[in-house]
Amino acid sequence: MNTEERLRIEERIVEMLKTVYDPEIPVDIYNLGLIYNIDLHDDGEVVIDMTLTAPNCPAADFIMEDVRQKIDSIDGVTSSVINIVFEPEWDKDMMSDEAKLDLGFL
Image (cartoon, rainbow, N blue to C red):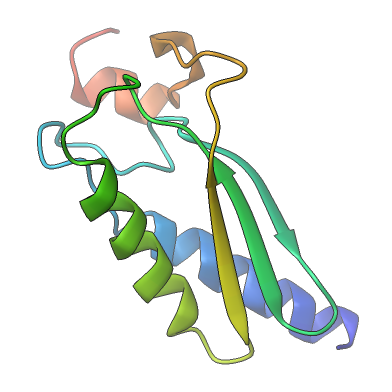
């Protein structure tokens, strides 16, 4: 995959992640700071390391499946692997300024 195609796919990945929400929080998972790493391989496989706001999040399965379906729907993505990690532990400082404003932290 060439550089232009890689950038287009990476932009689409971020756009798609911004459409995934924790049902209990009115901010998308990208702006919440739950996405720790996005690795796009040359063969089109995407590996995402993400966390949850709490280890016992009741919506974990729903969120992961939503991420997987949306990432897999992107033209140029051949497969996706979604890893849930808890290191480093998430805290509100990881949120974008937009998310902090939306949730009343600013």
